[in-house]
Image (tube, rainbow, N blue to C red; front, side):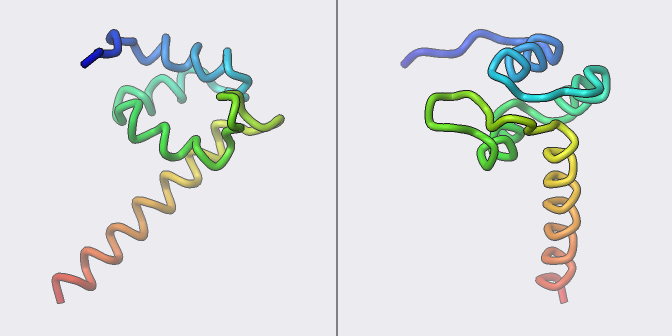
Amino acid sequence: MTTKPFTTPAQQVALIKEKGFVVDDAQKCEKFFERNNYYRVSAFLLPFRRSNGTYIANSSFQKVLSIDTFDSKIRNLLTRAIEQ
């Protein structure tokens, strides 16, 4: 089994930028990667990803934040509903 090397949040931001993702606020993006691991974030990037690993033109990090916010809200609603 091969393991991927550790990458810092700054390296993760550079990686998605390198693949063509638009990051307007690198610091905000880095903080997001500090709170969320890359594999969780990569799930939010999938809708914008092409089969060759690059991202659709004008895909922005702000859209990823919107998906994360929606995901969080829906999870909280579902958790409350299940608890009842």
